[in-house]
Structures are given as structure tokens and as C-alpha cells.
Length: 191
Image (tube, rainbow, N blue to C red; front, side):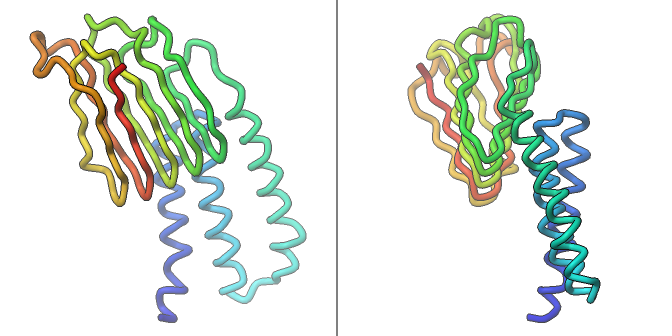
């Protein structure tokens, strides 16, 4: 039991670094890894007998201020973007027609509802969905074929509702959804 209390903060820190590398530069995507790193650091510092006063007096307020700034940044939508994130918040996104190709939807302790009905059915769209203790709802036109890959879903419920046209007549069209989730929920709804 004692060994578990020593390694779990390092595991959180490693997960935070992995997510940081995945997010590249999007400020909205940095909040989740920063929160994980803050929890891990706050757990590591007292365990190594460093001053708790330094953590509570300096590091914790700095992390909270940075987290608040990033939360405000996630509430402001980017024009013409292909990445949308909701961290500790809920929101709805209508994906514009010109946003085709690869789209990224993330919900970390929050919820995002994405309307993909405006994207033309003549192009192939890849959607990367990340739900970490959050919920992602994807609305897709009923006449568009969809393939959902759930290989990255751990304790994540993936629910598809509505009937589609079946297999694509042309493999260069349609929508492929890749789900990465931990204790989350993803819904694919045909409208």
C-alpha cells in the first residue's frame, strides 16, 4: 500500500506530460495536463518532506491562477478552428462547412456537444474524441456513414443512436470517429 502512495503522483505526472505532448500548442488543451501536473506535484512535494508552506503559499496559488486563466481561454471560441475543448465547462459547437479533414473534440470533466451536420458528405472527416471524466455528444447527418473506433476507451460508454446508410459507396467519403476516453461518455447521434 505504501508503494502505491509513492508512485501514483508520478503516474499522474506522466499522464499530464503525455497529454501535453498530444495537445501541441492549443491553450485549451493545456488545462487538463496542467491540472494533473498540479495534483501530482502537490502530492510529491509533501511526500519528499519539502516545505508544505512553499506549496500552499506559492505553488498552489500560482497553479490556481494559471488554471483560471486557461478556463477563461477555453470559453472563448476560436474562429475557423478544428479543435474544440471543454474543461470543467459545458458548451455546444456548430462545426462550420469549411472545417473538414481532421477535427478534435475534447471534454475533460466537462461536456461538449458538436453539430457536424454542416460538413459536406462528399469529403472524408476524421474526428478524434477525447472524454476524460467528461461527455462528448456528436451529431451527424442521418445519410452519412460513420465508423466508430473504441480501442482507446477505458471505462467509457460509447452509444450510437439512429440508423445510417451502412457501408460507404466511396471510401474517400464518410466519417471516422476515434474515441479516447477514461471514465467518460461519448454519444454519436444521427439527426
